[in-house]
Image 1 (spheres, rainbow, N blue to C red):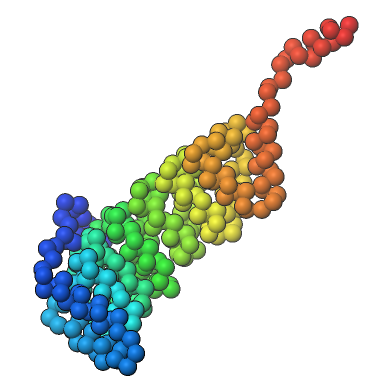
Image 2 (cartoon, rainbow, N blue to C red; image 1 turned 60 degrees about the vertical axis):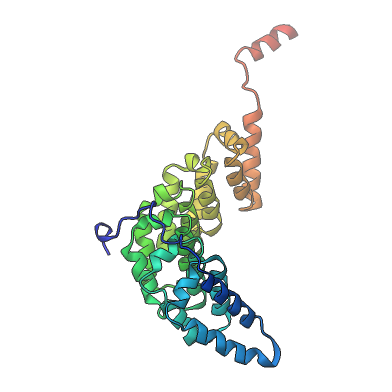
Length: 296
């Protein structure tokens, strides 16, 4: 969906803050006891779990509560595939609300981890229709990361990531957004990794001193395409010795320097030479003449 057609993200509206009823609390406790059943009664207990979760709006209600979300996650780990899909579809139409919820977002993350995207296409569809700002949301960034980790080349998911990465410059410096870019470097497609490195190289030293972007630089040195990793190393080694030494002393820049040193022994040696040369005092013009005069 085009960006202009997306629903505007409003941080003031939090669909995750919901009042917990005593009925839901009791149901969550009952389900927890059933899920903990072992031995000869385990099969019967599991059948009861499935029956209870199939109740009207049960999964949706429980997912938005502290205890209920943990029970739904636990159930997703042990039920059969078909039941897991049924549980997932209970949240169809509420994906954005689950992202905004401090509890239900964990259920959505679990769904993405245990089911293939062709089994739950509505997840990417609903995220795609919403604002790209959810990549910068406290919980939304986690959902984007789970999608990247489990996409396995899924075309709609990769298309969504392409759209998100159109805002790399802002994401890498954002408190939550940088996590999505880091995940794209590790799990994204080659052209997505190349795009990220291209943006980093445009302002590499500033990125390396930024508290959020520095982690993207570090991840790029580890997970970028081989040619891009080499280009980053060369960019750093071309820096004037004094600037590189300042970077090594910077709270965040030192993270990048350590990542560079892990690149290879040769690079580590070049870095050591750069730092050493910056510590040598400049030679005075008159130093040689003064020595000759003393000797005379």
